[in-house]
Image (tube, rainbow, N blue to C red; front, top):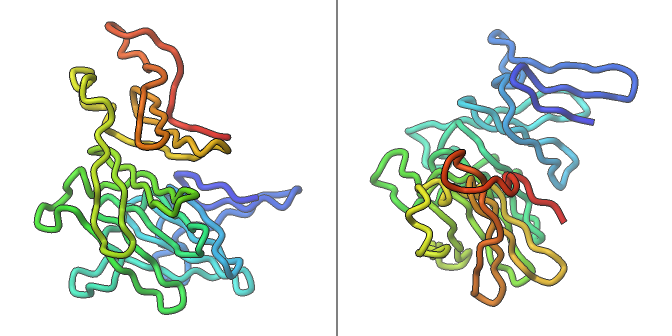
Length: 227
């Protein structure tokens, strides 16, 4: 079992824990100790996203890491070193969401294709990608700090999904999308800081409100959804 912590990557074999931490003198060590997300890739290696220090690949045979970090002089590098989510879609494509852009990662070459909605605006909230999910219809859903979007893999266009305009007075935190999942009835569930939405056939409705401590009742915390 693997655990990402704020002080390294932990591996538990059922008996003891081994911790992998950054060694400034060793470029094959993990790039940073604050772990945000972990994914096993198609080759059986681990992909590890960190805070501020990019993406890593852990090679089981050597127990060494390959680092992938942003290089402003290389358009094929990852778009930002703060990695929020790593997602392998049903077709095998590996997507990486960062604080500044959506990335399509090619593990064989170690390169990235970067997709941004506002490439001329540094740290645009629309490009702060928190969640990625591809549904049964092949639609790639992107959750950001400025709402929900569908991404067209063929023409690279983003389409905004307006979640209940009538609740725009409930602060703007409902636009922060934390999780997306599809259930067995093809309903898309979207969790935000305040609301849970469900979307079916293009129609959406809100399910509950997380308390703002004064105006709204505390029903549940929609930060994590599971089916």
